[in-house]
Length: 245
Image (cartoon, rainbow, N blue to C red; front, side):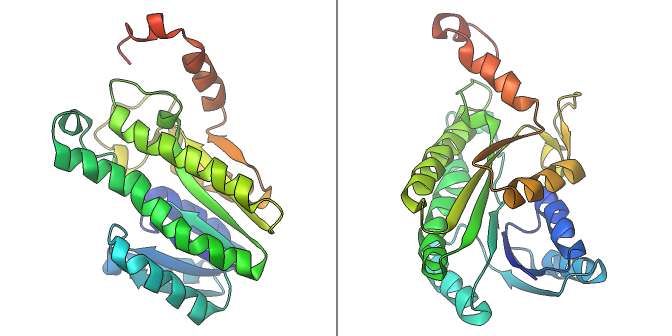
């Protein structure tokens, strides 16, 4: 039985990944902000077969609490086999273009809080000489677009952070997985017009569990976004800057 820490456990995608681990009778540690929702998710995962489920209710953007909470997790559980960082916000892209508070909210919720947590988590996993850290990022970080470049900037920063951490930790027994997701049909995207390119949360959640099990470095989910982003990134800048993307 593995011990799985899910950060941002109330997100729809994180819930679907948690179900995969619960069915395999693993122990789950759920960290999120909404205690009532966390308890409901924990009850469901116990019914699905999870060996043990515990919850931590705390605001993930409270950076000052990260060190103590990470220390408490390792003190209470001894070790953690897999950490999935799944929290984030889409925010208001138009507002973030002109409003400093919204811009900082997007950067803090999609990059700074992740980097802070990983700064404390990575040494714990290096000390135990094994483990996998997986982070949900986005294809939006592959190339800046006018529609969401603040959000995309946070995800691009996350990709660079993960690449560097994977390089630094190579040979320590700790592996880093960057999960680049295309748009997924979840409550977070309820106001977005859906297209056939939208992924389904159960399939994406299962894909995340497979990528972690297979020790992938970077994975696009759904898979076809790898090819879509290859095309987008191949467009010369003199043409790209004229497009309405």
